[in-house]
Amino acid sequence: MSAIVADILAAIPSPGWRGFDLGPVTIHAYALCILLGIVLALWVTNRRWAARGGSEDDLWNIAIWAIPAGIIGGRLYHIFSTPDPYFGPGGNPVAALYIWNGGLGIWGAVALGVLTVFLVCRYYGIRFTAFLDAAAPGLILAQAVGRWGNWFNQELFGSPTTLPWGLQIDKTIGGAPNPNWPDPALPADTLFHPTFLYESIWNFIGFALLIWAGRAFRLGYGQVFFLYICYYTAGRVWIEALRIDTAELIFGVRLNVWVSILIFLLGAVLFIVSRSRHKTPEPEIYTERHRRFESEASGSGEGSGPGSAEDSGSGDSGAGHPGAGKLGGEASSAATGSSADRSAAPRKRGAEPDSDALNGDGQDSGDDQGPSSSMTKRSFGFFGAVTSAISIVPQVGPRARAERRRARD
Image (cartoon, rainbow, N blue to C red):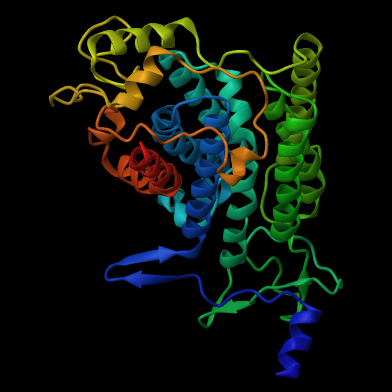
């Protein structure tokens, strides 16, 4: 036992376990880390958005599109920035689809995800920058957790090191050479910089920093998100410089280093411009379009705002609805009393979410548990099922509080 403890203190071991099988399906540890990060991001965003006076339906209307868009964007960026394993000499183009083997570029995920959020927010009448500020801490928290998937895959580590926290990598796995081993000439006991751990710790610190800064300086109008961009890229530059995995080089410098520098500068400019114009958060998180949706839903006694099938932008029967589309089913049933009350008077709040947004004592975000939301009345295939399952996590607390209030009344 003492020898095992000494080995752990001398280096960080790599896990021999990478997943498990459920019949013909393999559940990869990498995927579990990504999924856990998504769950935590949704939970944090839900609490913060509710603290700003937002509806829980907003989050799911956005997440059902933003999550798959982020995964697709992340994979596309990875393939673009590291094309050789797929399209280079001896590459396998089909392997570009093997997402479980790792390979999600954060900037592709953020770019396509943010674009999707913008389009959905525009449709539903949600203020784009207000939602970005609510989502930013959850986003960096998801990255902190998701990075542990690289540990299970024994990938994306740094250069050799003699530091006591060096990472052990298996030179062979199952009797075959480890494809991630950098140089056959290196001895099997070589240790490497655990860049996954560096970035995970950096991001956990960033999560706390964003929560604190948002409250202390009353950040709004996208400033929390812009601060996230600056903070994350500042860390990514030096962490990326330590990595030795295959990457495209520009003037001898890794592509991701250049991208991080450019995005840092963009985030800094956006933060300065926004801060010079706005010293407090948005007084309202919804636009006139959302209020019109809410007013129509309240007047007809059906639906729950823009999420219902009756509320398309042109007042038709829901064609082109970004949350579900017209699938031939019946429209949503009548809203519950709590949903109607919220529709009649959309809430607004100017202050940045305080600690209640994380400890569950803030604004109630789950009273509307009736059948009014189109997001709970229609089928969206695989990603819809995943998001619906994830949505159980933040709904448990609000449902319990709502039931207790109704029992007291």
